[in-house]
Image (cartoon, rainbow, N blue to C red; front, side):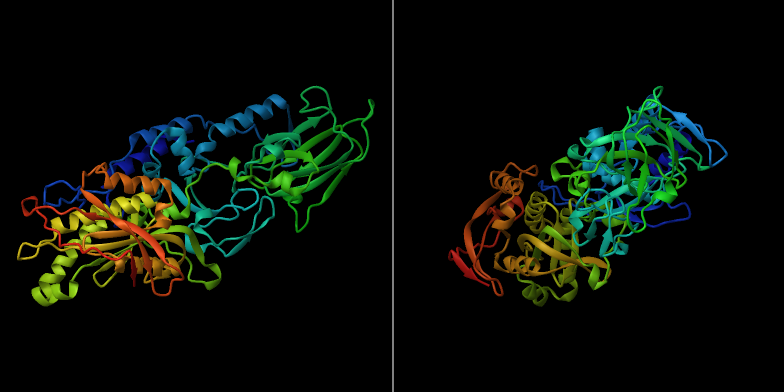
Amino acid sequence: ADLAEFDRYVSRLRMIERGGEFLGDNNGLLMRRSSLPTLCGDDDDDASDVSQDGEMCEEFWQFVRGILAKATPMGFTELPDPESVIPKGKKDADAFLVKAVSIGVINPIHPAVIAKESGIDHETVMEELLYATKVGLVDMKWTPECERCGSAVTDACKIGDLPPKACCAGCHFPNVIDTMDKIKVVFHLTQDVLYILADNYACTPSCASMAENALFAAVPATSTGSGFRYSVGCGKDELRPVLKPGLYRMHCPVARTDNYLNVLGEAKDDDKPIKLKLRISTIVPSPEPTTVSVAHGRIHFDVLPDTNSFFVLWIQNNKDEETLFRLPPEERAPYTSATQMLHHSSFQRLFKDQVVSSDPEALLHITNVVLVFTDVVGSTNLYASLGDGPALHLVRQHYKVLFAAFTRHGRVVKTIGDAVMASFSSGRHAIEACAESLYNVPKACKLPDGSSLEIRIGIHCGSAVVVPLNGVNDYFGQTVNISARVEAAAKASECYITEAVLADPDAKAAYEDIIAGKNKSSQKFEATPEKQLILKGVKGPVRAQGIRVRRRTSEHGLVSCPILERQDTIQF
């Protein structure tokens, strides 16, 4: 690690004015502050321009620096002759592995993991890494998770460059890349800051797999291709006693090697160690694993890491691939998904060009996206009574309120006339943003006669295909249709929320807190009766309940339109 270089990058980060659009001047540092207001729901009618991104989190970068400080040169001494090897024992192998693990949290950086390790909020960590990407401190990669072993199937700098299918280089399992929920977003420190002589990812073996280990030793890469000797059954500095006769799996998902070791017989007392040369570039399987046979299990493994890759001399009992390679969900580390990244406010500002592929063979979907539709109540009469110019000014003001609320933890997908479509990865965030909008639009948007502009909102969730449309990530599917029709069922200053959204306990808790007046803005809402919505093009009724702004007197700045009671079943 080069701590001085790291400090220079962090100094550049401090120079950025956060919360706006990345303009990319000569130094790549200029940021323009956002012009979107954040209304907090108090009784002040003025909307001030404030940044939705926070100040730089010094604590996070201090945490990263503390780990980097451990990354002193951590390999072994290498030799100029690529055919030479240096003997190493168990103590050397264990010490190297411990040191490699000590910087594992930053090589690569998984935002969810480092957030947990540092105790810093996940959203804050994502923000720091996104800004760091812009100044070149880190590179952002989209890495689909292997269905079987959990490691990275492939990677791309842009999500639109991911292939529809890929075979895992670690376990050879064929993967279909079709969901954003299983695409991990990771970050790599620039080589100027952390020089790693490796070009791929490590995997995490399961507990069941590790129980089948016969030998596990970490081997550092070398720049010359020279190597190291690890001995088995050779007495002094041996990694383990002799290997018993049998067929073993000898593989390394990091260096992408996969072979068999066949120990043919028992080692006798007078048998000399067999010198087994393992040049990494020659044992990468193409296309099938090869078998290396030895007469007995007293072996000098002469490992020549000539592929610029960290290597694990990993020998296991020859069990089935499911036992050796599958990492069960409960043993997988948390990660930041492409779905979460797509909805982060800093990502929306800094990486607007990151859209999914337009290739119909490479479609991606989100398993459960929360969609919000809004519309202005009485917009036709608004334009007729005020005229196009004043009405448009009022509509734009209402956009500012909605965008401020929706982009804090979600994203605005598009506007359709006076309507807004937004998406969230969390039902809680969607409900809270909609409550804020219902309350603040009438406060910020006054008509000449003193009355207020009002909106209606619908929230629904489900699976949707992500498609590139007009340069943004849009959505397609029945979830979109239902969300729009649920919005049409609502009245003025009312928001309908489907039971699919409220089935999430966290979303339900947010809804109940809003009704109880416990939300942080102290906004006042009441629940609407549960409805059975009969929606065009939707089989069966859609159950929904919602919130509406409580009636208030004019002295408090808002007079709600009377909300008419409706039948329990309504058709739209």
